[in-house]
Image 1: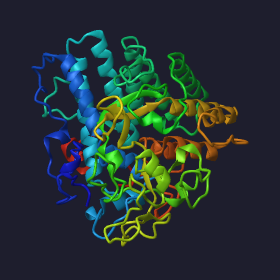
Image 2 (image 1 turned 120 degrees about the vertical axis):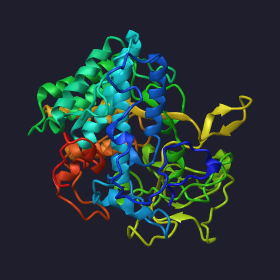
Image 3 (image 1 turned 45 degrees about the vertical axis):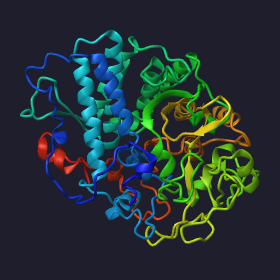
Image 4 (image 1 turned 90 degrees about the vertical axis):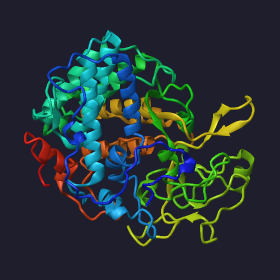
Length: 526
């Protein structure tokens, strides 16, 4: 039900107009990646630098939505569940299909993700084929690689159209391994023309050498999946290590103070952030009656986590109040005293049990009962307003936004969504070492040592490392990618009955794309 966002939040995210029909196979211009500039008379863009800036904004907007790539990457995983609460969040079952892996090729989130990513690939190609400066050319190659990486990761094959090919020409289709090579080529060619990249928000909102090395590390870490190989190749794993070492040499490192990383301030962690409005990340999980002093409209009461994912964090499994002994990354719920003293109301991380307003007053639901989030979600449908632990990483409270350098404002309209982060790179290096037969324990404990109340692990194996990636990187777009690489995406978890089908490791090619381009072949199982 919360696909229509309240105007009072002023959240300009990409929305679905309506779920009138998820089986509408009418071909639209976006299905064929048609552009006004496409055709045999393409002579280059008039202002490639301006087009590059527009593309950065579009990519940020595409990844801001709670649907599309976020749903495909996170809602399909063991981290998130959007249960139907009465009639809220029913939406013709599209959210439940994501969780249970029962989507079809006409699912609107899948179609929109395909179209948006492929549009971005073509727009980047137009910039590349124009008379661009070396820096603009390098950044455009990075953005093409970035979007092609996600098409390859989510769908396998990638259609590509030349700038001089009109809509009468069916796009060529790259296989997954061919797309791997193209992404690798774009990134390696881009490296020479990109700025080095140093910690600080002014530099990390665009492509840099550090960002290119990060994406190369992702590419090589998942090479087994993308190449269809039987095992991880040591040469690929060494490339992961080399790429991460290059990032570290630029000054990036693990930041102390976990939730502060997600404020729009200088830090050593952020390698690349997207120009994404954070409204969906803040409000889609919170109850209608939860707010902060400058955002009094409340949340949308949808996104929750599973009890079993919450239980992978250290601490009392049934409470998450301040002082309950939980590790830093699990966050906290302010109790009456803490809420009143800190004037923040909403907690950080995983919100369970009774919730409080910013003045320490216990909150109630819309029926006047205590607003107390339960750990368990009994069913995908038929739920009340309080089932499920809520998750928040970006907070509406922004201590960096001040009117007179003394009075904090509460600002949910920041355009600073982190997509590449050093702790992820650090864990990628640890995993690469493990895949080569090494022991990743020391590296994992180095990260944990920078997180408060997070004790060292005695040993780290594959299962432990996957759990650690979940604890560090929850709701940051990488959970599905990790689960596929660890062969766990088809495993069972709460309220997901469909298991064991390897075909769901790829999403189907949308029906409209198949109709518009006969060179495309549907993925197996669809």
